Image 1 (cartoon, one colour):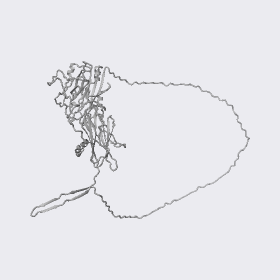
Image 2: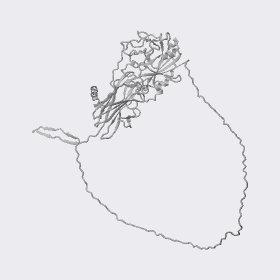
Image 3: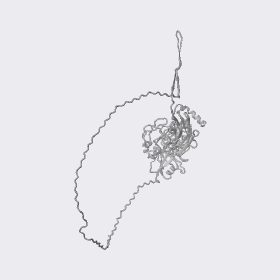
Image 4: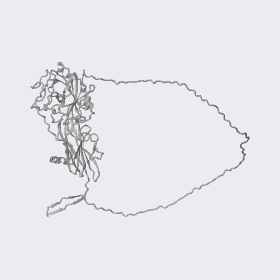
Length: 591
């Protein structure tokens, strides 16, 4: 074991002495990053009739350098617009809320309120001078940011890609996009840049909001069209965006909790229509990458003869298998680790493009019926006459006349037969037997069995020596000697194992590396053998090759799980003695 590993184990000694506790990794100070100044190409304006409330440039809704990011209300979400190089974005109406810009990425970073429609303007389109588009956006969901996390680090990313601009500007289509927060269990297992958003194009006959609700939690709805709004429409705001049905969905209170444990008071949103009804507040699991524990089908020792085999391990599970059998017996056991959660939301989108050039052809099934009448075939065949000519044959027999051919004489026979009688009488016989009772007595002398056993443990309790002094006319000293007590007790076999899982960060973005450590210790007084550790990763966690660590002699292997990620296995070579401690570790890349 390396010096660094021994230092880590010594540092954890105090934790094990106080008992087992399931906890996540050490909390990191996630201080807000200092904004890097205005962003190039950002133009955020408001209607002419509304005067600016500050002496800064009219309509600017971003936090400049040297200022502290404001504490955003729950209904205000940080939205970052991204697109091709040179594209400019304006928020026309209503005016956005001030928001931190974070790492100064993207085209524009603004604060938008949930449930309000905003009208945008896209200008300086690539290879289209003078062309302007006026999309609308409405937030239908919200994040539950933990405390001490910069809101600009995890913005809702809205991407205007080249395909969207071509469909609207060149083909006159209406593009509808629904941005959703990916469910970590259903996420696509491939690595993306933190500024990228995976997109899925649907058929025009499908409902994007329903599809997004099945893949995750809808967060925003964007519509991009080529119609230029009038001055009255710009002053009035976005107005009817054609997505009022989305606003009416999920009017019930939000079932999630904030990072500080407080209940969320905002409306639930469209997620309430697709998710099962929740009776008590819970943590928003879709915003976290939670790894460890044993959910779903309970893990069990594998039925194969392979050493350390474990069955029922699903993605996200992390368990340890060990054998507490003694004296040649086998008693395998399964113990899950604690659950470690890292805040790492990731967004994706579904889109449809409809317009004059898009045709939807719906065809009814064609039924082809072929009826064929039975043909009746009649064939008249006249009967044929068969005549056989055979000459008559004459058979003659000649016999001499005889008067009597056989003579028989009648005999007379008479006989008389009388009836015979038989009479029998059967007498019943009676047998009686008398037997005197017998008394059997057996006298046996009690035997005394004594067995001498060697003492295994000896406990001795000695009372203190008490010296009393009585003062008076004469002085007397009294001494009481100690009382000794000796007992014999056999210590029982009490096997036990403790295991915890830790992570070195509490928040991560796509591309970041997380180090996981699984620590175990034999808490009993008997050796533990056949120790193996299994950790099945989520689709958004990618194992970094060559980073698995374990005790000397440990066999490490990987296998693909059912969600496209990896299942990591460690098979320890040595028996774990009472009080022994060890750990395994690995690194994972956030997808």
